[in-house]
Amino acid sequence: MKAIRFLRPEVIEYSEIPLPQVKDNEVLAKIAYAGFCATDIELLTGEMVHIKNGNTTYPIIPGHEWSGTIVAVGSHVHGFAVGDRVTSDVSLGCGECEACRQGHYNLCPNREVIGSYRNRQGVFAQYVAVPQRHLYKIPDGLTLEQAALAEPAATAAYAVTKAQIPAGAQVLVIGDGPIGQLAAQLANLAGASRVILAGSWDEKLEIAKQCGIADTINYHREDVAQRAAELTHGGPEIIIETSGNNSALDSAVRALKPTGRIVAVSWYNGATLEVAMNTLIVKDAALIGSLASPNSFEPVLRYMAAGKLNVQPLITHVMPMEQLADVVKLVREKKEMRIKILLKPE
Ligand SMILES: [Zn+2]
Ligand SMILES: [Zn+2]
Image 1 (cartoon, rainbow, N blue to C red):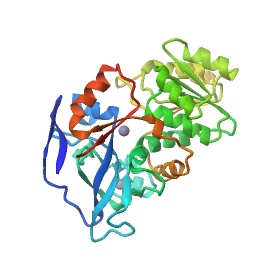
Image 2 (cartoon, rainbow, N blue to C red):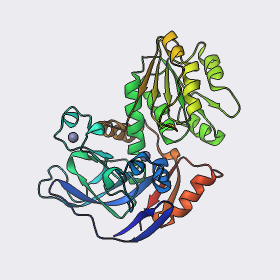
Image 3 (spheres, rainbow, N blue to C red):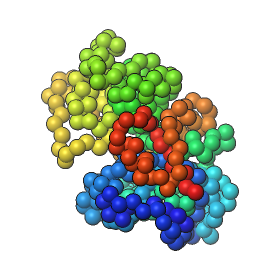
Image 4 (cartoon, protein in one colour):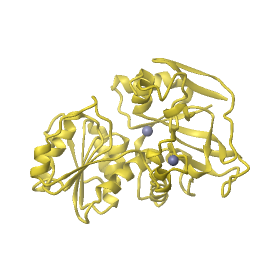
């Protein structure tokens, strides 16, 4: 099959490699679409922690967001058949350890992560093998293109679940990328009375408004904490931080209404990060981390199929997989508006 491989930092190859081996409990799926994600860039530069600590080594097939169709099933697979349209978790747990048994397979000490950790094969390829335990059927009425956004949607949904949004709460989401856009829509669905999205691109903030987000803040022009306080008359009770900017976390602490909750669903620069802890304490508030997307694919696929979670406007580009180098260039130049770029294998 054809696949993208990162051979070493900054070296991309698109070439013929053997088909993945399929274990008894796995299916082989033909990939229809693969989503390009910021973590794929970290893998290309070598900045990803897994590369630095040796848990991921070159060459690696990147990519972890996908949709496709089953073409073969292992002998122990039940409930899935050739022709089923599917997507999958990214963190693949062992299924046996305490973390897995409690549903925390994102924390499984034996886990593999598609397209990174322990070199589990990624989805920037024509085919991928995935254990049945981590597969999800794509509901009727959802296109394969839309279903390729299930992973960022599930990541956003897990963060929104951890935020425990009280009915009628005012919610601020920071970051206008895919996770921020999807978290904002999901906060609406979770019972917020008003969701505000803070970002840096007017075009992306306009798309958010088309998807039902009441207010937006462009942080190049306005102070997020100050504007959020004005819009909410006292500060949002819930803040979901998706931008990964160290300063955004600071804005979140300042903006938060006392007794509120901040959920951070991103990765910050530097091993340690200064947080105004005394402000959090004075506000009697909580700061919560959110890792990956355990147990969150089925709810978001249902939301998408029901037409409640609108992913189509977030798909700004669909490009041939062999043009990955151009995609990387487009992402790095930051000249062209993009939210989610999908890659299509040949
Ligand atoms: Zn991703
Ligand atoms: Zn496990």
